[in-house]
Image 1: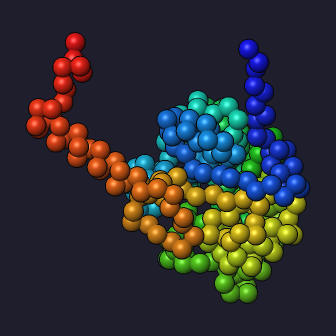
Image 2: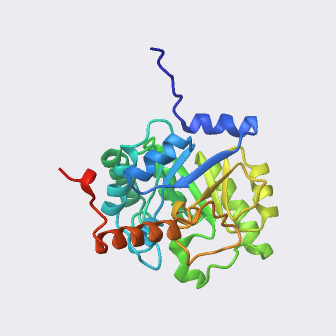
Length: 270
Ligand code: KIV
């Protein structure tokens, strides 16, 4: 039997993909079963996003999820993955104010989940924490533009960096993060032209969610693109399925079969 060699996606591989102009495909994942499907389908990066706070736990923002809960989700995902790169969000309150605490949080994620990298929201304001985590050898993915952990500061989920001042800050922050040593950058909900500019300026891969088509890769929230969530329909979201209807249809059929005494039949019992 010939053994198939699967090349693990590393930060180095992502850099090569950018150089070759090969687009990077990233999706969120929060549990073992779904992560196994993502891996089998050939996804490049699984992001254990703090959007778990919304889609898994039902909160209205990403703020409530804890470090322990992120580690639980991340370790479930890691058990399903052999090829993809697994990146884990540092949750709100575990890195913003204190770089020592940031390093401690990142180390806990790496040690307790077995993930490959962490992601952090913000630019200059979190640079000290980014530096400290990087100096411990932990790869960091940046995240600029709409940063959901700051939603109470923004007060709205509208497109970010449409004004010159904010756009200039985003470009400056992108360069700072690259210079610090981040291996990739997520840009969320910004004008496509600005996304293109940053992707062109930076040597590291830029992955967009609502940042247009001229960046180096794309990410979506799994439950949104599968149509499990229906209450969230931004322009950038392409739905590949309508699973909420399919799941409800299956559950209705199951209930009907039980009530009508059709399930279980002779062949489905011992
Ligand atoms: O938590 C998340 O799902 C994210 C993506 C939106 C990039 O950070």
